[in-house]
Length: 59
Picture 1 (cartoon, helix red, strand yellow):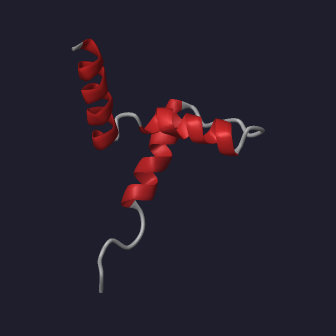
Picture 2 (picture 1 turned 30 degrees about the horizontal axis):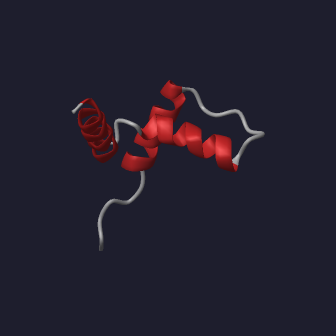
């Protein structure tokens, strides 16, 4: 039962984007090992800018 709850919690975090920083850190470690990763605050600021800046309409 404990494993099931942990699995459900991990899935919920992934679907909601709550684990985005952890996934970013894993990606950085695997794909860009020589680069310093962003800290949590900088990462979320960058993501907010990426999400909300620019044209957001189709026409």
